[in-house]
Length: 304
Ligand SMILES: Cc1ncc(COP(=O)(O)O)c(C=O)c1O
Image 1: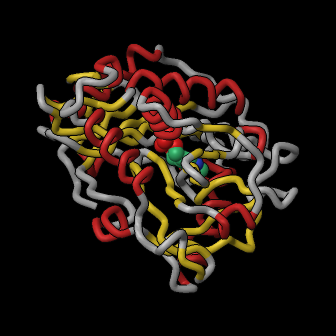
Image 2 (image 1 turned 30 degrees about the vertical axis):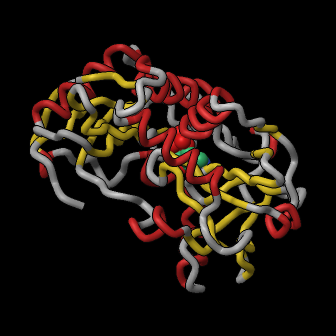
């Protein structure tokens, strides 16, 4: 990760190395925080942040669900993010807002603790590798189950919940795969450690519903709209492990992963082991839209 000059912290721009928190921060001990991941692209008319407002709205929703005070407006955070990109002279990059409880309480009850809001931005290439985006990645179904609706909130982007993703991701990497797919407690497919899942069979796309324990991904939503407008049918439906093995194509979506084809699952090739036409079309539509090379959905490109 390459440092940039400034981080926005509690309303002020501070030098990267000075953006620090106390070791007794509540969020550090108990994962009491919420975050976002957003990308800015070097688009045709300048730097465009993809669906920045929608990401900040999701942060506000996560905070509401997780009972974390949200002391800014969505508009404040949108402006702060744009300003951060400008002062750091970033033409493209990744933006990471995170809010968390700070010091003042060491019991589980965070009442009395300070609340912080931080936004950092830096340059970030492909998350699952250029080779993965071009030719597909190898994934394995994880032995870890996706956190359940009855214990936590997989649909809110709470920092503490990400231990679940970290365990699945590191186990997959250690076993020689690129990414993990998590089933939920009922044995139904949920999502990747940081990506939503799409399965293609006989020309129709299927993706697990949020009730299966998946994040309401902004890329998932964008790709769904773009493909539907292109004439494809996408169904939210309960999916099983067998559906993966029977699939013609599988791909993952996420802000970091963008649209990444899956070429192998549990050592079985997906289709003929190469990214298929629907995946390619999803990549073209998505990358064309985020960069403005396609004139689709101009409202999603928020120029800085
Ligand atoms: C668990 C999980 N699922 C899915 C996604 C994809 O969501 P989005 O497309 O909004 O980045 C992410 C990334 O934020 C994630 O962390």
